[in-house]
Each structure stands twice: as C-alpha cells, then as structure tokens.
Image (spheres, rainbow, N blue to C red):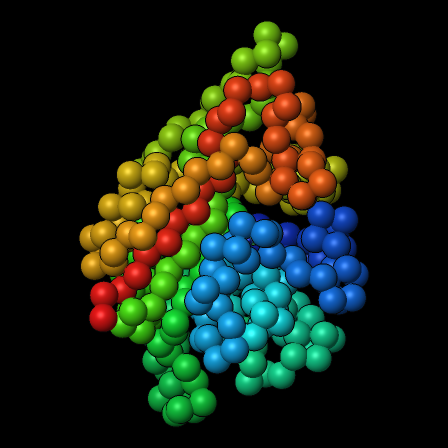
Length: 285
Ligand SMILES: C[S@@+](CC[C@H](N)C(=O)[O-])C[C@H]1O[C@@H](n2cnc3c(N)ncnc32)[C@H](O)[C@@H]1O
C-alpha cells in the first residue's frame, strides 16, 4: 500500500473507533431493527436485492449498511481496509444475531480484493463466495480511490454475468463545495476531478461529529467527475442502465442546509444543485 492509502487507513481506523458512538450513525436504532440505508438505494435496488441475492459491499465502514442489506434477505460480504472497522462490523453482526454465513466481513484494500478473496477461496473452497449478483458502494467511498479504472475492473471481476453494480454517492459537484458565503453564493474551493491527490488536514472533526478531537494528520482524496465514473464502468465492459442526480444530500455538508422528514438534507433557499448521484450498470450475460 502506498503512502497515501496508508495515511488514509490510519485516519479511517480512528473514525471507525469514533463513529459507532455518534448520533449520526445511531447504532442503537440500528440494533433495535431500523435500517441504516437511505430510501434511495433501497428503492433503486428493490428489484435485485432479496432472498438468495449475493451482495458485495465495497468500503463498508463498520458494517451497518452491509448488515441492513442482510436484513433485506441478501447474503453479504462487506469489505474495508480498516482493521478497526472490520472488527466492529463483526461485533455488530454478532450483536444483531446475523450468522457468519449470511454476513462476512473481509479486511482488504479494494484494489487487492481479487487476490484476498482468491486466497480465501483457496483456503475454504465453496464456502467462500467470490462472484456476486450485486456490487454496492455508497456515500463517500469513491473519493478515497486514486484510480477509478482499476476500481471498475475490480467491480467487473466480482460480478456474475447479468449482475448489477450500483453506487449511491456524494455528487462530485457537491464535493467541490464547502459553505454558503455571506453573499449567498455557494463557495466551490475544491476541484471537480483531480488526478493528483488532494491533501487535507484532519484536525477539523468528522462529518459524523464535527467537534471530534482527531489526531492531526494529512489525508488524501481524489474527486472523480461524473464523466470519469461512467467512462470507468463502460471501459470495464459494463452496460450503464442509468445515472440519476438529486438536489438532496444524506448529510449536512454546510450551514444553511435543512433536514427533511425523509432524512435528506436540502438547501431551502439556494439553487437546486446536484448533491447526490446514483449509477446502475450491468455486466453483460
Ligand atoms: C465514508 S466511508 C463509507 C461510508 C459508508 N457509506 C457508511 O456511511 O458507513 C468510506 C470507507 O472507505 C474505506 N476505504 C477508504 N479507502 C479504501 C480502500 N482503498 N480500500 C478499502 N476501503 C477503503 C474507509 O475505511 C471507510 O470505511
């Protein structure tokens, strides 16, 4: 793993320790039976996720969404490169009474996953699923990946013929923004798409707890434009079914946004800018 990914993994290990205790993640409600998934991905995947579906969740954090898909009937594999996230996901799985067969969690860098799961398959044989009906990823995942073409190859590698890849993501245009200025204009200090890593200092809290006292370190992000996402999927041999854009966000990115009864955040007085993106594609039969 290179220096960028290694710095990012340290940061995510720290967040995996912090996040389960935050109101944002509300683990108590999840343990009580509520889903952590947004209505968007549940509705857009309703026709393909159900009993007997095998689902691979890339960059699953500490597993709430992965386990929510298991509650919808799927047999799930959650993957994350943070050992703390994977440890917590397994504990959460045991706490909510889902079996290891229905939900397994694998510690791996996304790019190394083909090798990681092949090794597991060699060790455990048929018990270790390595091709899937659905590959899922969501909200804040792609920005940690330097190379989307390699990511799309990994996705294709794990899809069965006819299988579906689905992502619900922070829109790359929204990822450019930081605040609404005093003049009412939305400030866009970040790049729409950057090949070079964009460095950030981590002492400013997390999206789930803006007052959190995090270790000071430099982390790296890569914003990917819509064209890059679509082109990567097409380049990996997948058929795009749709690209949807929505003027609502699953989290409060800056002051002035208001949460609706549906759990989505909007800018009531601002222009309708794209904040969320969903993309669905299939692997040809
Ligand atoms: C914003 S979180 C995903 C959040 C998820 N939608 C949720 O709300 O739980 C991004 C996740 O990507 C993981 N991650 C970042 N880079 C990765 C990589 N190269 N390989 C695997 N996981 C990675 C982090 O550990 C983190 O758990």
